[in-house]
View 1 (cartoon, rainbow, N blue to C red):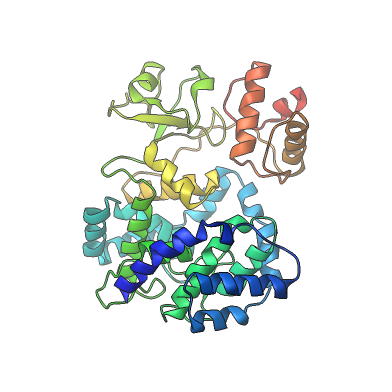
View 2: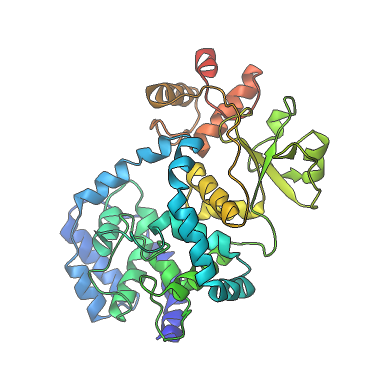
Length: 392
């Protein structure tokens, strides 16, 4: 079964990128689904998968969830404080001990530490306890027919139908509202392409088999470009003055340069030059917590595009690896709610793409803030303050 699924994966992934699976959306749902039926059949989906598609329906609750992701409007300190709970820390450590041999095998084969896998396992489903109650096929059909982001979801349909067609998943499989399945919330393409039979029973079961979950998650992370034996995140302390315009996740500089500017470890001791490059992340401005983001941190953003979520996941992984809680420091007052929306509107009016007036400090909004801080001669740390709003 596993070998046959692997053979199908490459063909389906290529098909998902073809013009036939482009971003058509909206219009009459019946006609749209008929076209999708033909595309799925052309991709090799058989009778069982096509029958499941014929029964698929629009789920309004999925659209409601897609439009209401206000949790990411929280600051990093608020979000991480809620998500990194004593329960998750305790059970994560216990699971790392319980499945130590599987984690060791995953790291040996794919180069991904157990702490990194465990953090995603904790945040996504509390170690499999909460895997979601949305009908997965209905969710993906809904988001593919909807015209907000069809390009993200339509390519997942043929793989999901193939998994159903071959009996790997039931037609009524349930998961997250955005189509993720299993204990670390894997999308159907990754299920096919990176699924690993970790327990040797001939089936990749990401809902019930912990060895399958651990090995598949490791392979997925490796497939995104994870670098073996390299760090992902390191808490540091920044000086009162430094070239702030040189900070930021994407502006990776030699650690030796950061040392020269006065960046230290979290306790104020000299940093060790590891010969790598890293970007200085200031999620709540230059007076808040500070981190070095190495190349491996960028892999987190391929899992989830929210800086708040990914930084929380990376720090939780560091906690599982033995690091202490981060220092909150003393961040400047930021903007939330309507103040944040007002700032985004002003940035939008100045020609910046802020990704929507939604009150969320996303990557685009941070970059727009940095550009305006440069223009105004303010310290460039990407943090929205009342002073910046007044200046605009």
